[in-house]
Image (cartoon, rainbow, N blue to C red; front, side, top):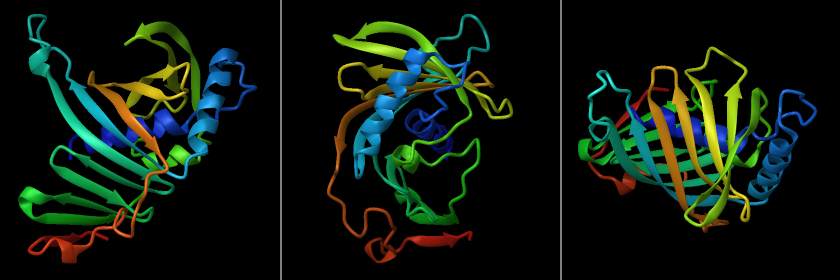
Length: 226
């Protein structure tokens, strides 16, 4: 469960907080215009699926610490459809129908069920389609070339200083208006880097895409915490 919070947070903030007040003087007008275009693009989708690589970078305790040994790499897949999501990562499956959330760990043959609630530190990636969240200041940090693509990096800072992170960098492909990566800076020194790939809009779904069917997982213990 250690990676769940970071993943939900970065997707929610990266894809949902762009609808900041365009008249807010603390925001860069160029960044505002780009984010509004990205917002409109993602809102036009019925749903979206994507692959991702998550790098969890822990801070050095000593200057001589090996950075590679302090970095965990995880591969995952996500499907988002307002207000629901389906995430597979780190040998666990996280499914939400907008009201309930199931966390299934196949190796343990156990699934936990909770009501899903959002807060400033726990976010729903399903907000990808409602893109209205206010509460961030942002500016263009730099423009770079990554993999032959022109990338605009936007730095976002939460106005609520009580949250666990102090900054998020969003990398946007200027040509496709797709988010290619995001980096969350936690106050404890941990960085979460999400590299998105194979983004496919309007994916076909079925009745089981956003619920956990216990009949299809015989022998699984259900821990209902609702």
